[in-house]
Image (cartoon, rainbow, N blue to C red):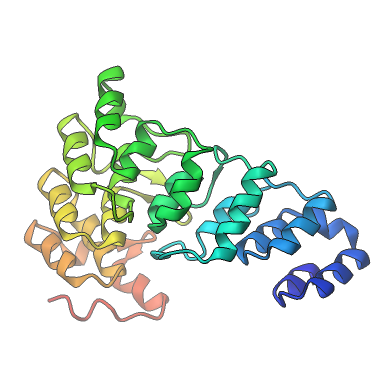
Length: 281
């Protein structure tokens, strides 16, 4: 799409010219998601005037999700003013924070917790529903307890997009989150650390999220409470967190049985151009 090329220049005049040349591209979901991903607010506003849908989905990403999660596996740190202004405008003009997006599918406030942005969460709290799943990601222990009291099976439930509360808790990178305490509470209530949720290439479990956040205390808690160690080993090695990999080995993980993307772990790492498994003895 010529419009995508124009958006990536961050030159509004080029964007306007591309829209004039092909007006239909302004309403394509990819365009509004790309503009949001770039936090290019003038372009977002222009596309909106030309009929773009602020809740459109492109490869499972909606504008709010694309704005927040610029890297699906990383902590984002403090967002700049351009990103915050873009979020404010999207929310004020009809972007729905309850819509599902990203991989795994999640409400945007949970995605904000996964990237570790207190600034995004503060804004979304005013517009989004804060229930037990969101509370698990935010570290709101009292609200998690309330959800467990109201629904005894809450610890084993999946949110609309498929995430469990345990996954929400251990995947959170918020400084104020309490992943260990919430995870322990949910595990005591019957949460399954091996419950799986569909993601991009394969289904993932709590061990996947704990490895991504590289929290040894939480990772070990999951292993102690029944997380499958060989599966946990794969997540740790893929994240290059070899202390976690050693922890999984100590809990009985079998290196030769480890798989990723339905292939032996070593094969998958080689296919991806990585030799990260070498440090694991």
